[in-house]
Length: 309
Image 1 (cartoon, rainbow, N blue to C red):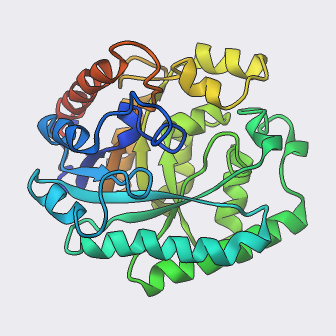
Image 2 (image 1 turned 30 degrees about the vertical axis):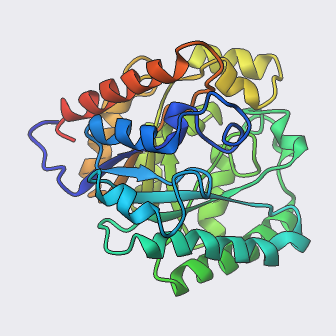
């Protein structure tokens, strides 16, 4: 890939690669301090960072300087929506505005950060990660899909009114996980999709075929590698979603079963431009886990640099 011009792809990392995400921040004392994490991301050679849980990296007054002083731009912010709870939607639109306020505070970055919308799921799905591809009874009925499309349209309109084009992140153990569910998303809405190679593999999909099928509907990338043997055991055990991170289903780039070279080549061939966010979600639940994660993120950046990205 070194002979291909990939200058239009900007490479970021994410706090989840260091053990900092929604189920650990403010809960697990082993989560790294925000400034130390930003130093690690910058030192590893990334040009951007995903926001992580709102407030973790800093508020609207703090964050711009913290990023600028380290040569980092904001790549996006993950935002869960409780599609199964219509009564919560107005409150969640207000919470979306808080996220976009953080984006505004970091205005001027290019590529612009992506509001990364996702389903918050429900206990009925969280208990069965990876099973919906072969058991469609776990999915929404037609009324559920209609409600989803209408609600997502409201959130997309709010993002666009604020000057940001959203992306939708299919996430394991939610109602938009399996390839057939992602196809319904693309059929029913005009929102682009975030290609998360690890979550897609876990959901029963093929990331290479996804790039071919979705083409220019892909407007954001979360690049993960994943171990199929670990994923298969999680599904066979009907293990809850937390086991994905506890059992280290996601691994250093090149150490798993995602055909990353094929994915990257196809993305370049389709003319993808924008952020590529490296993610290697871990739990900081073992001695030295955060330090090992930091070393892995250096290796992940070198993996992409060796491929001209």
